[in-house]
Length: 131
Ligand SMILES: [Zn+2]
Image 1: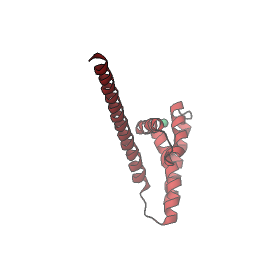
Image 2: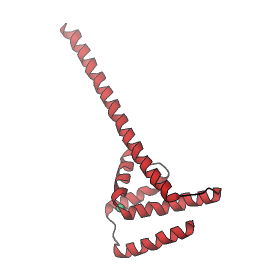
Image 3: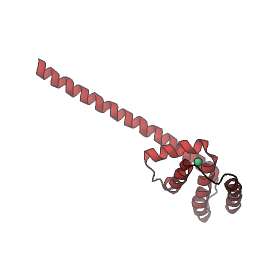
Image 4: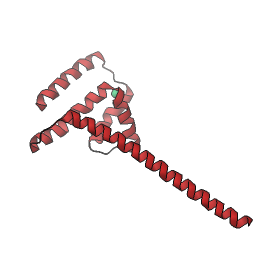
């Protein structure tokens, strides 16, 4: 089953590659991030660019699906789990987006707290100086 899927994907890619032999630099960059993404090693900035790009780029989506199928698929088949890798990958990508959103919100909150702390400190100093 896995093998068949990979072959289909691979064949599809061959046709596409023939039609469009020069992927944009952006695609090259994104594809170079795939192994890092699957290992969970991307920085926030990289992960943001990665998930954003995948939303509108079928070529790169296909590329990550193949990588994911190969990496995860083989591991799961060996462990005997039932699998729906396509849905799993989708969940993983959505999870990444949520995680990025949360991290950004968290950073904003920390930034606001820091700003407030600095403001209070300045206010205290001013009160001491001008009382
Ligand atoms: Zn792309």
